[in-house]
Length: 111
Image: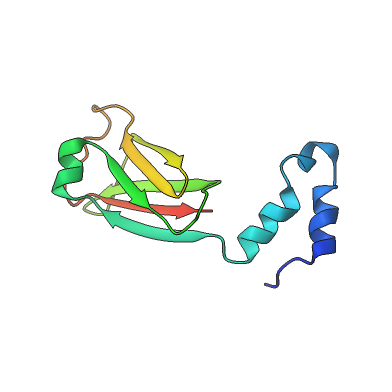
């Protein structure tokens, strides 16, 4: 896939008034040119004790994310993830949904 041209980006940004503030052409171009990063993080005992996980990504300012926690290959529900700059801050939405444990795996895609 090739990157969008400046003209195409501008045309997409002007496509309609509602999408102008979203800068849809710029966002699509960023996605096409490798601004999407995927990764995985294994929870340490210190993170499990603190009931919080901070994962630093290589995306300077996260605009969107997909996060999934697994234990022994099975999905865990109840993950709450907020972003600050390039960091994913992961906690449990409720202790009854997910008690963070050592060696749980957090997989993510950020852009």
